[in-house]
Image 1 (cartoon, rainbow, N blue to C red):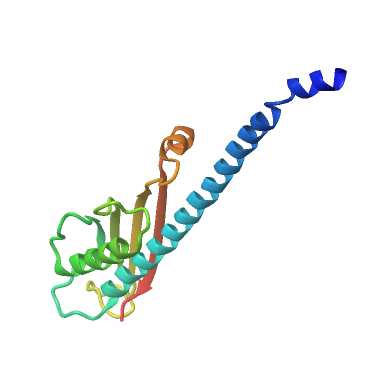
Image 2 (cartoon, rainbow, N blue to C red; image 1 turned 180 degrees about the horizontal axis):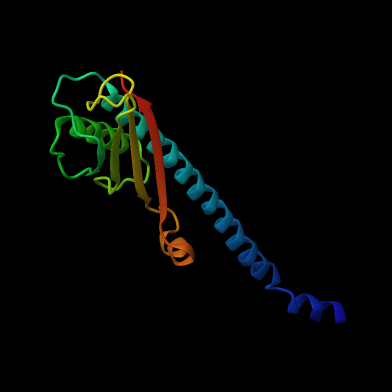
Length: 163
């Protein structure tokens, strides 16, 4: 009779144990998925930045942009056609391959030229730096993760020498 009472008291214990362990299991599973998507988006942003830099180092006849830093957005055309070609290359690649992109990319593109051979014009041998900053949008657990640490900024910087 003592054994029967003990079994009746433990009837719901398996359910409680499953609820605790399942919550932890699902949190771990969704965390792995979220980390994988963020890592894929980081790789995509690196490739998009590389595509923009490739577009910027190609030979083009004058007039070329002045040296300095230019900040571009995906939804705004650049004043200079060469900077606009870089912007289009980065934004097109990102919109095609980013997993967390739910519309137009909300990224900042910085283009900087350095006159390495000090002749006053951007030509073969000069450096072009393209820096892209993309605020990652959480997919699986947005409210939970944002309350823990806020927004994750994915940044990619590529430096290439002009042809």
